[in-house]
Amino acid sequence: DARVTQTPRHKVTEMGQEVTMRCQPILGHNTVFWYRQTMMQGLELLAYFRNRAPLDDSGMPKDRFSAEMPDATLATLKIQPSEPRDSAVYFCASGLVLGEVSHEQYFGPGTRLTVT
Amino acid sequence: GENVEQHPSTLSVQEGDSAVIKCTYSDSASNYFPWYKQELGKRPQLIIDIRSNVGEKKDQRIAVTLNKTAKHFSLHITETQPEDSAVYFCAPKGSGGYNKLIFGAGTRLAVHP
Image (cartoon, rainbow over all chains, first blue to last red; front, side, top):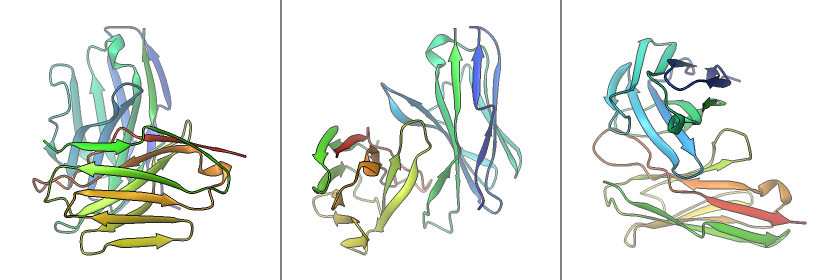
């Protein structure tokens, strides 16, 4: 049963430190999404990749956040420097898009980030 | 951008009753309408979806109905059970060719035994 994996599952760090979150999408999926979930804002889309190319990162604070896909098996989300307001659960999801037809997005277990 | 609203934000029912959650969207170009369920501390998971060429879809105790003219779709859960307690998100596909989903704010459903 293929699943999206994320590391680390939990991260506690001090304000100003760099944080890197990793995601392994399901093999064969051609889209990867990064979401942030907080009680106040719900599920926000931060970035979206299709065939490893970044298509939409309009939801991401550009000054401190960056997202990359160095290869088809790894997506990374980096925050530098981190701030307390970045505390949230970060989900990665992958899916298969054929042409303009959307299919299910499979979510990873999430990374719970706490910035003190 | 796309505006997605869910109602109600919280819903409390007795076991065995039905539950209905409504999702209203603004983008008339949306053509894919999924519902995700997120249990406490878990990841969101797809429970049912519908495409714009279909008005209703059913899977055992859950169903989704779509009204494209009015731009809303609804999740129906019949014979609710305590394990249905979760947060439910609608996520209509946005336009613009990026195939991204726009998640609603969620509906917290509590099913009481």
